[in-house]
Length: 359
Image (cartoon, rainbow, N blue to C red):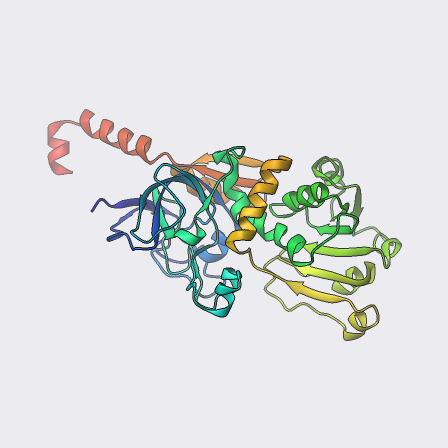
């Protein structure tokens, strides 16, 4: 059984280093993907640093995978060898519980994350249950699809959850890795789109991405003038914020929907919800069918993340760029394991025989 090659951290906060492992025999429901590209997400950093207390080491990050099918288990359905596919946050669900049978496999109590107790996509190959390995529309490019499979579905799901009409007014908090895709989705959905930012420098870019209006929340009165007008706010940031002020901008029956992984509790006044029958909600990524809908929508409406590319062998440089906040707006790693191995073999061939013997 050939080994999988990957980049792994041996401990929390550690640098990633070359790591090989034996995946064992492919399971009956598993699909093996040859990784072409893999997005780098803030959740990879949170897991790398064990911020959520569920990381196991050696830890191989990567849950925004794009590639092709190279092997299928005996019970894997709906896919074929050579097919272009993507894999996001989840890699397995039980397919037997109420949630799974209702089409909400992402809410399965035993659902497994691609990088939670499993080796992820910063590798030459990765495996997952066939349910979560989704075919890619021809119009989508492999080198830009990865971020859609986590960040994209995360901000697309609220549009589905709230059965949002195209006449709705939607606010997006944060113009970053999630927010820049949310602006595109809301605009192509047909909504009036409001971008909330703390930087005037992002005004022009937010409008280019789909915002009809851009509001700097640090300016006095910026939110008050919107009182009672927004139907849905999608918060994409992972920092504390003035929830009360945003709730005041909501129209009756409006919803503040959080998808940012904020570690501190959200402070919400009961009276801010009761009077206008407003709500606060949240969601993870989405079901396999929701992912399919998002991919089809992206293909039809040319929605794509803004990406920067790094070879996978430079993964630590990519991590540093994301940590520094300089990425605009997603980072995608390109599988260069074959090139890296060829370069290593070439260097070894050029070494004197004595050096090779010592190695």
